[in-house]
Length: 289
Image 1 (cartoon, rainbow, N blue to C red):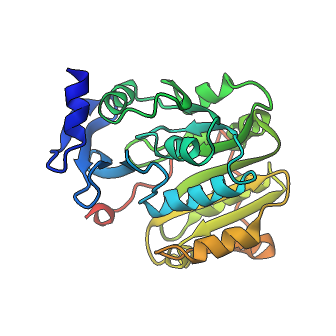
Image 2 (cartoon, helix red, strand yellow):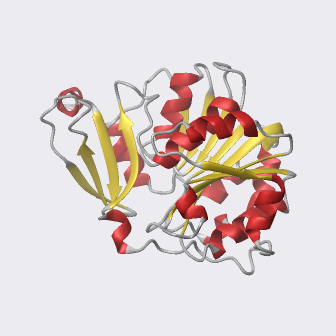
């Protein structure tokens, strides 16, 4: 039965798969332009896009930007040890497995029902070294050994908002503990005007990492619309020049801010602690129309 279901997933005439999971109504919607590609939505909000025939293809803008970070985190093709906080449809874990074979990865996804749905309908390559842990992102991170990861990627949303306990300096202390020297942390941050949440997240990261860069659509940085920004941090200099070039050449070009310009952008925002942390702002309904 499982084999026939997966075969149906591969047909161009495939239909939407809908199932209630812990986080709401999950829908796998077929991509009519790519025969074995699917978009995951949770309560109508797009979460992931996966092409089973080409896992190195990244459809969403912010995931392409995270893909650039992955590409530049180590020499091309070199295996990495990666932690993914937030699983979705395992898009970025599949990307790492495709572009950096023999990588060892841990995915932490709280929604056990979603994990089961994705494993059943969009099974990852069985040869990929991807371990999935159904747990809260911070609790799962606490189980990762000191200095284990060369890459930590955070893309965690609950009801289209990043939970408060994943926005603090104490959370980033755990990220620093898990990262090996020279390792890279990257987070998908969603915000809109007046960008108070994004500025606070930059200040929080600056309190724990000496090297930062921010990749985002210029319209988002100017506070003209709600959108995603990718914050990149490390204890070593980042490949800002190459990241800038790649971001600028995307179908939807992005700008990279770093150094003094990024400090000025924060506008004096204070680091966020557990005691003061709040969830990221909810996107306006128009974002998903």
